[in-house]
Image (cartoon, rainbow, N blue to C red):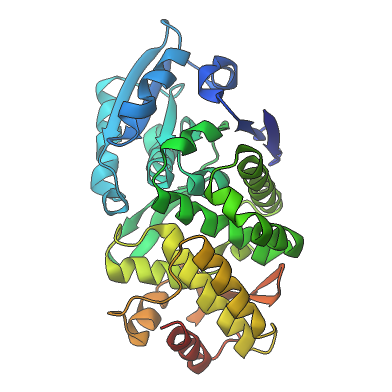
Length: 360
């Protein structure tokens, strides 16, 4: 088992545990539960696989309630969150309760938002069961739901008490979900570590085959990168925005196609390719890097072209309501070089359009 710490100060630091068979050891979970009330939030896919294992870690003295949500990004909305509130209120959960998010990014985001807002804030713990959630969404305290006009537009910053990453759960992960998680891992190399990016190129086949040592190393490096950024910029006033590389384009794809049709990581893959192409057009990155990234994404079975039914106008219209728009100006995360990301307002709309067209 390997342990990282997200350092936030004010006694809000929390651990990330990474290892095998962690769901069989209560010592990673119990110390982070403050009271006797627990609400496990999971979904219809994960509940049959891991719910009983997590319940078995809790003692007989715990009041355990369970919410089983429908599975899919299309259910990440306020109406679904009400199921969690209903369970908490019917079970008379007080401010010492702890929510446990057992699932992928959608479950984690919704359970975290419920924890942030129930009685103005209660504790929660992340047990991510997808690779994407393990390396990205479970760490950092971003919680929330989608709106028909934009992804993650309703939410709160609310940090977990702990993140428990059991790599064994990836054995039940569908291939498409595995690839989606790899997209976020590739992102870390692109924005902050060129050597890690090269390492991924050399080890992509081992990651795809779920080699335990290589997967653990990739998760550890990704979580460390995320933890370092969150520790330095918890509320995304500067540096943390670089974690959104490719995401402005990705969120537009997800919104236009209907949430759930494209997995988040799939949209991020194509979004990163557009953003890298735009970085080339800005004169910052060598043009050969686009082909290099495209090849890596294809090796990971990720999409490298924008949806055929989506126009450039749709991209621009949806991106205009992105959270990174400031004073009417669209801010994009681009690369100055591989391993060096910046947030910029300098990209002209015509170049943005050209980069979208280049990824058709």
